[in-house]
Image (cartoon, rainbow over all chains, first blue to last red; front, side, top):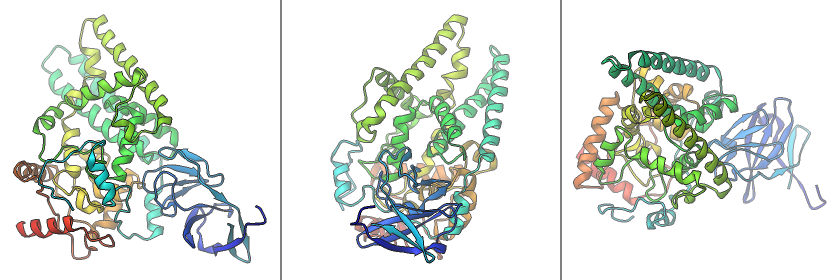
Length: 106
Length: 370
């Protein structure tokens, strides 16, 4: 994280179920915020890199998020594209949890 | 919206694709029925058990009827036995190709991929090109000039439909593609939806297919009998009838160029045997609206959605009757479209989407016409 980044409040930590994802809109941008079964939090861009479909409607399986439209998959901890038709990696963002809230670095 | 009465250009490289883009129909936001997130998570949950069970039954039936077919070869018994074998080869071949292509049938990724590759060869569909073709079909379902999987044009081309009863149109087309791909070439329209990064994989898959095909033909020559080809290559032709009939019920007669799967897809009820062969793809509106729900959860998804979707066709024959009636009408009026009424509990067609005068005029016209 560089000094230019700012921490932005995304949601309450309890607003995301374990092994699930929620949508977070900020200005004209949209993100997906994830919680693992081990209560770790991650954030990525909201839209799939294949087509403009929001990943927050998809299915979280372990460290994978599956796009709800074409079943492409990403590892949301690294952003790596893991299953076609997804070919381009997903942008990830640093996350911290403080005071019961999830912040992402933008 | 343009007049729909003339013959349109269904190619992916013509002007219709550009028109669709201008009309906001490309990779657009589709209508979805509202289902609580918790319930959707239950429905989307992946399992290995149902698909392993069904795959073992499928392969068991194929081996059993294959053995019977070999035993009966040269007698009249072989006719009905090969008919059953062909249906068991091609129909689940098609549905397993489809579900494993989505990656939802099994929880374990390699199992999806293994069955996908085997089924792709069985039904003569190049695994990688068809993965991308089907992805486009889901992005732009029955958008003319964009969807490579529109079964027939308006007005319908009956010759192709009749030939497809025995895969005699699509089969040779795919054989030609295998050959082309195995020499490292790709058709122009394929380049519209297959990324260049996938070409190499496409070419190698085609070479493996050609090797199996040539090997099977050689085996037939070697033993001096058609039997090896009757078991491995030819079932995709003589067993294709049910694949065609199921395929015809999915979208035909319904709308083109809309963004609501309730308008362009058809759900029908089937008995358990046909649902096993088809892997529940009779719940076709449900599948298109929520493609991440695995086949084994589609009946439950249907229960969640049926208050928001048209009443399903009561069976395969009823659905086919509706389709053929519409295709006959489209001979004289290519714009003829079936509008399936929604239950009172449903949100209106095109809810939340920009008003579409074409759709609106069709609904008004054909709802009145019954």
